[in-house]
Image (cartoon, rainbow, N blue to C red; front, side):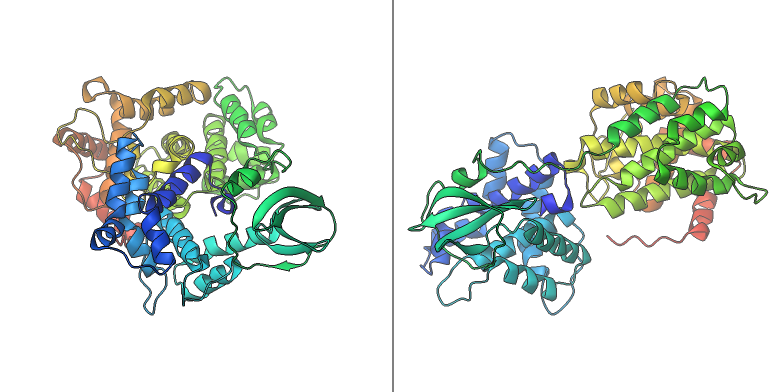
Length: 480
C-alpha cells in the first residue's frame, strides 16, 4: 500500500513496524485464535493488551517514539470503525493504512467455520463497506498494484502449480510450488490466466526465497526532478541578476512551472494586462521580487508532489499561512508578500523531506511554557523539534543570500535576546497562524508583546481586530 501511495522509505518503515508490532508480541495467541483453539485467561489479557506491550518492546529497542506508538494506540478503534452502519470520522491517516492492512490480513487468514477471502475479495469488500475517503483511495491504489504487479495470483504453467511473484515489462516471474513449497523461479513472457485464492504454503523460508531472490528484477521508480528544481532554486537565490532575461533562462525549460508562474503573477497585475510571455509576467512583479516568486512557485510544486498521509492537511495549513501574511501586510508593505511567504514554503518542504514520518495533523504544544525560544513552525505540523543542524545546512545550500529565509531560520534556532526586528516579524506571523487555527494559548508573554508590536507596525490596532478581519476574509471551521 505504501508503494502504491508512493510514500518514502522512512514513512513506509514506520508503518510496517507498527503493523508488525500489532502481532509480534502475541503471534502464538493469534495463531491459536485463527485455528479456533481456546485461549487461557492470561493469553486473552495478553491479546487485549498487546499494543501496550508492543510499545514497551519498541521503547526497549530504542525505536523513536511518535508515529508508531500513536498508530498502535488507535489501531483497534480504527480497525472496527473503518466499516459499519454509521460513518465514524477518522482523522489519523497512517492509522487508517495500518488498520486496512490488519483487516485484510484477518480476512485472508483461513479460520474454522469462517469464510476465507482472497486478497482481491477482501479489498473489494472493504472498499464497498467503508465510508472514509482516504481509506477508499488507499484501497483503490492497492487494487491497482495487483493489476500492475499481480503478485500472489495462482496460475498453472506447463501443468505445474505456480504463484506469480511479480511482473516486469512483459515478463512474468513465477514461483513453482511443489508439495506446498516454493522450489524455483520461472521466467515467462506467455500470457497467463489465474485467480487469487488463499492457500497455505508449508515453506519456512518462503519469504527469503522470494524477497531476496537475485533472479527477480529490481523495480525502479521514475527519477524525479527534485534535484533539478533545487539547482534552479539555488540559482534563483543569486541576488545579482542584471535583468529579466537571465532570470527567465533559469526556469524556461519547465512548462508546468511557467504556467504556475503566470497564474501566480496575476495578483501583481494591477492594470489587468494580458501577459504575452513569461518575461512579461515577471516584469509585472519587478526584478527584486521575481526571483522570490519563482522560488516560491517551484517549492509549492514540490510540496504538492510529495506523497504523504496528511498531504491535504499540510497544503491547507500552508494556504492558511498565505492568508495570514496577505491580511497582515494588506495595509502596509503589501509589496513584501514574497519576502514573507517564500521562506515558509521552503521550511515546509524541509519538514516533508526530513521528518515526513513524524508529521501529524494536530499541533504539538511546546513543553517549556517559559522557553526563551520562539514558537517553531514544526509545532504547527505536530513535531516537538526539528534538526537544527540539517535545517541550517539546508538554508545555507539553497537560500544563503536570502535575508528573509535567514530571518525565519533565526526564529527556529536563536533565543529571544538574539532576534532582530525582521526576525520578530516572522515570530509574529507564526504566532498568528497557530493561534488563529487552534484555540490554544501557546505563546509566552514576550511573544505576545512581539506580536502586538508587529501588528501595530502593520497598522493593526490589536490582535482581536486582526482575527476578526481574518474570520471575515475566510471563515474557518476546525473540527478536532
